[in-house]
Length: 319
Image 1 (cartoon, rainbow, N blue to C red):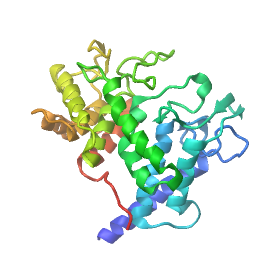
Image 2 (cartoon, rainbow, N blue to C red; image 1 turned 30 degrees about the vertical axis):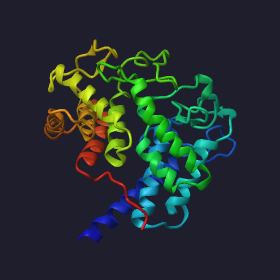
Image 3 (cartoon, rainbow, N blue to C red; image 1 turned 120 degrees about the vertical axis):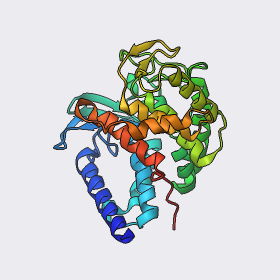
C-alpha cells in the first residue's frame, strides 16, 4: 500500500513538473528570462507575464531536491538533482540581459542581491532592487548549503543567517507585522502598489517562513519571539474575526477574515510559546476549504499549511 501511494505521488509530481517545464520555463536562450519561469500563466499555459517571481524558483528548487532524495533521479527533466542544481546556479549567477518579451522590453538579472545575500522581489532590476519578506526561506537555504552546487554552499549558509537576522528588522516591534515589500535593511519599500508598505497579502507568508525555519533548525531564537508577537496581535483582534490587511502599527485596512491568513497564522505556532498557539492551529482545522474567487491564493496557503501542520512537508534526506 505504501509503495503504491509513493508511486502515485511521484507520478503526480512528474506531471506537474512536466507542465511547468513545458509551459512556464523560458527556454529561448536569447530571452532575458532564459532559465527562469513565468510567474503567472493561464490554464492553457499561455503566459500572463514572461518574467519571474523568485519565490516560485525557490519552491521549484526545494521540491526537486526533495524528490531526488525521496525517489532517486531519472532521465531528462526527471533528473531532479541536475535540474535543481542548474536552476539554483542560474538564480544566483544569472547574467544581466536586456531583450524583448511578449510584454515589452525587460532587463533581467540574478534573483539574489549578492551583497545583501537576499532574494530579490523580481530579477527585473530596472524596477528597483529590493526584496519581498515573504520570499525569505532560510529553512530551504540551510539545505541548499548542504545539497546544492558546492561552489555556492557557503553563500546559501550565509543567506540563511541573513534572512534570520532580517526578520526582526523587518517586522513591527509591537505587532510583529511585516510589509509586503522591503529594502535589504528591513525598512518598508514603497512602490505604486498600495500594499507595498503595509501588512498585505504577500505578508501573510512571512511568519510561516520564519516558523518553519525554527521548526527545522532551531538556530534563531528570535523567531519564537516573532511568532508570539504576531499571534498576540491577532488574538487581540479576535481569533475568528481579525481582518487580513493592516498598517504595520495595527490599523485595520480590510475587515475581511481570510482563510489564507488563518492558515499561515497556524504555521506560526511552530515557533510560538504563547498559551494560544494551539488555538490558532485549531482555527485552521475548522475553517472551510476555500472556494470561489479566492480559491487560488487562500487555497494554496490552506493546502501548504495543512501539509506543514500535519507533518507532511518535511525534509527528505539523501539516501
